[in-house]
Length: 89
Image 1: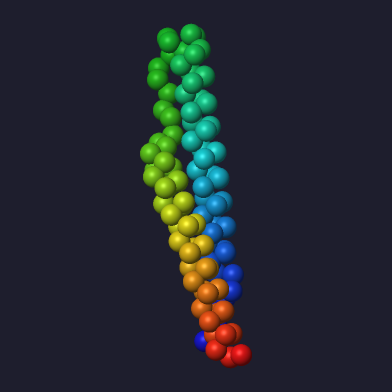
Image 2 (image 1 turned 90 degrees about the vertical axis):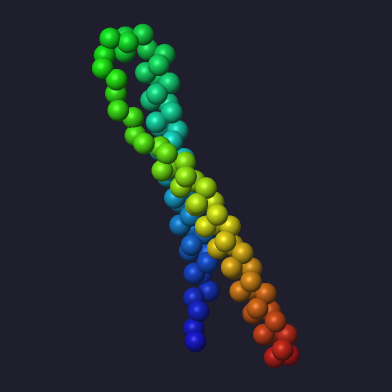
């Protein structure tokens, strides 16, 4: 049985990339909203549709958990490998 040694690290990197992308989208939407609120010329214009950041906010939490669990799995894998090496000594 062969297990990829980088599978947990790859999962952590994917969660990290997703966190960054979600954070960027939330920051962009927040900036756009604050610019529209502070611009007095937008009062006469119809309201603009903003991106739905609810899923991104929830995704931040799930990505953080996914990254943490991938690191925990990597630690368990390293501990088990250490135990195997101790047995083989």
